[in-house]
Image 1 (cartoon, protein in one colour):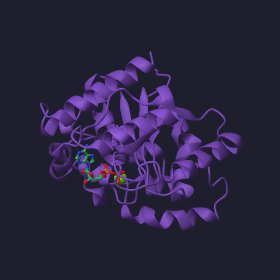
Image 2: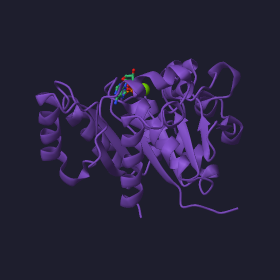
Image 3: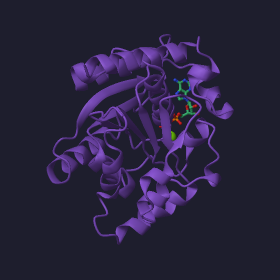
Image 4: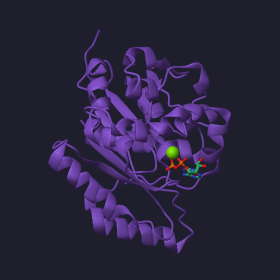
Length: 257
Ligand code: ADP
Ligand code: MG
């Protein structure tokens, strides 16, 4: 079997509702559509990435078992409806993990250590993260090579970003010197709104060429797809949302060539 130089990318922003889960599901799906072996890890106790791919979280081992019960990662990986896409689902039990982790030895690197045995099996590992900067997120930051930061076009879009960038710097200094920013992703863009254009120009001023050329527009189909347990490619492949995420993934793949 082919062995890959696996790249671990986390989708991160401690704000809720900015498009992390939607981006995780659809980036992972479009990577898989291009026959790129991909593993999606759902690290959010809300388990929206798992349910958004039609997984019944009560029937499977989850990231909780890896983080807390020391269960072998290979027992927690499921195939999805999409070829080349596997998932490690989350579970609502994970909400207790922040506290359970506090007393654990090597508590910052449990995820990193667990992932060692699947490196080489996938080209990309995409991690959806919870809306906080607690120990679960610190595990993700310790394990990842790079970050995609979705920024929603709304008032106060940049609020909280300096805290996030500070956390990233601390992790780089103490736990993971190789961590970098893969890209900044504008989400829920609406070209009719001045505010959307304003957010884009502020974000570009701040992050320069780290900002993806592809914006994700506001698109109702992207909001509907998860309730059918489907990524946008299976729900409505001709939607603007599908086109946006497809373009994003080709931009991402180009950047990584
Ligand atoms: P997060 O994971 O950061 O909390 P989500 O991806 O769950 O954010 O998105 C928040 C809500 O907005 C969800 O209901 C989702 O379906 C919806 N949504 C996400 N992206 C878009 C978009 N581009 N257009 C319309 N609705 C979106
Ligand atoms: Mg989410």
